[in-house]
Image (cartoon, rainbow, N blue to C red; front, side, top):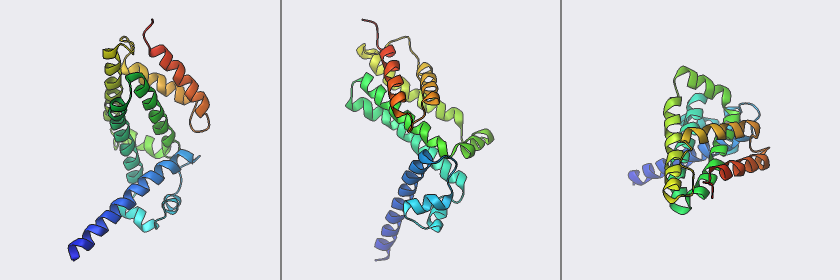
Length: 190
């Protein structure tokens, strides 16, 4: 009987942690400044003690959200390629990248401090994201649907530029238009 109770508690704790990550991501997107930990707990429908049990510091929460989203971007590239032709997969992945950028809105100060201190290995993240882009580009090159002379670094730089001038969510229409223009330029000439 004790084992069943322990499993139920663990499942509940896992659900709470997942809920906290999901809510924190959403709150970070909509926040103009870094939201309080109490606001995130309240939005997630858990007590502040539950939040601190899973994430004892703001930095631990920011790191978990950041890593969760990087994992989502890398897995997202593979999943999209399994479902869509490479150009459509790349365009949808660009939207995921925009969501990732938007999340930084409410955690930017903490995230930058953590990157600067080395707590978050920025180079590793860059390598993982470039590999995800490369996977899609290589699939598109193999089918002849994407240009062979474009690199993952070109795509990443373009995306950063687009999302710098058209930050989601308030500029979603502009970002979408610019991403579509970028996609047009990634197709080989007829």
